[in-house]
Image (cartoon, rainbow, N blue to C red):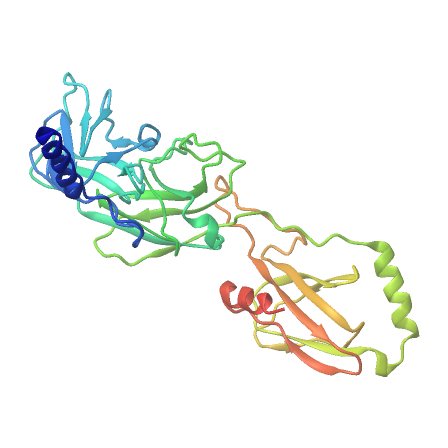
Length: 368
């Protein structure tokens, strides 16, 4: 009996020593931190056949096989994860090039095991010689929707270009559209940003893209702008019945029942092709000639209601929207961000047509 009492008391004490993990609290959003690296970032005279990263927490990398890329190519490059340790190995029979900067890009594939926070733009860089390539290229993608930016791949294509759209160096832009390449040699590149829809690591003609050619690596971080078109321009659908019906109604309306509108167009160096669409389905297509100054167009008699102005800048004056062409080194014609207006009966108004930043127009449209 005495033994049983003592045993029960021991279990009670043991229970008091057990600590449960606290519930709740802020979610861990911190990516795994590198505690050790071999070779060190920017190491010189390194000719080994293994690289190691040790993190402060357990890691996983389910997509690393598809994202891992080496420049110049390391033969039989493979990886192994051992708890908090990532080992990268390549062929021991490969003789590394002399006086070359080597780079292994791991993208955003390495993440902590519990919350899956990725270590962004992870890379290993070393040189087999006495110096590291230290130039860079920085840019900003213009024209891509905010939700698409972080899904894009930005690739540097070496010259002379051989029509293979698999970049020598790849990265992904930030949610603001900025991107950066470092540890570059003295060289000139074509730069292409694309949505890798089929996940094959290179740009295919059916995938949305933007490009900028002949960008030289440099010592400063001054960014260049890379135009991007997420989708082709689509003209509003023409409803001939609605157009004819409203034209007939307008002919019978008196001055107090319509709006008289004069559009004020800012200076522009090329023709604008625009569609003015009423919420009922009525559409008017027009071409606005170039002008060095702000111009006020002739008065228009319009049906009261809500309108949307669509269009594009017709740089070559052929009346149709032309998409980007990498082969012809032609950028897509600029698409005007749709702008919304509302006109009421018995109004006579000069309506400015603005070209503010896309974000400002979207914010105004969301108020409607």
